Length: 256
Ligand code: PGA
Image (tube, rainbow, N blue to C red):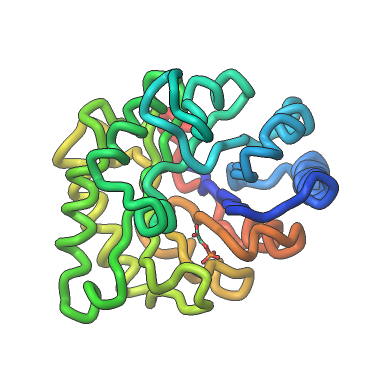
């Protein structure tokens, strides 16, 4: 499958900058036809203009979060069906910043992922241990528990991407060692294969301080099917350099 390089802009980007950034990435994909699949996750305020800008391109669009309900009295929230209606293909759920800042639980993340599936979106379900949990030797157990609690039963390759993001590596400039990434991604793969048919086809992304100078090494690790990029996705040149570092597809069963 082609590697997926996803840019999570978080709460960054005013209209002019965000549109210019997306335009540069779209122009590059038109000119170079990269082997990696690309997706952008701008703040909600930029979804509508980017949906228009990216409509005829190979760059997919996604929301950074959704509510678990389809509609209703939830001031400030956005439903998965609204994101789909705008032209989104993906939605991130359970990012560690939402788990920390908004107290989101595994059960809430699973409900959001289920809503995404019902809306026809691909849920990018984020998991990852804290530094203290890793130091105590509990990283694998934490991530396995998060997967068990955060993936709804109907999760499969067509509707789910898992993103492994060690919390201590997000926005810190520190990345997990390739051997640790390999160990964790292999454990996630085993979990996916055991719980669902075709779990071997679910993309597993690595996230946490992915930059142009470490992307090649991280993307070459077995079971790393792409990257969820935060800070480095805010600069077109860095994001493009990361996409260029992605090795081409090994095999293409059922994948575009
Ligand atoms: P970072 O963020 O690349 O800035 O570490 C990654 C993420 O939170 O998705």
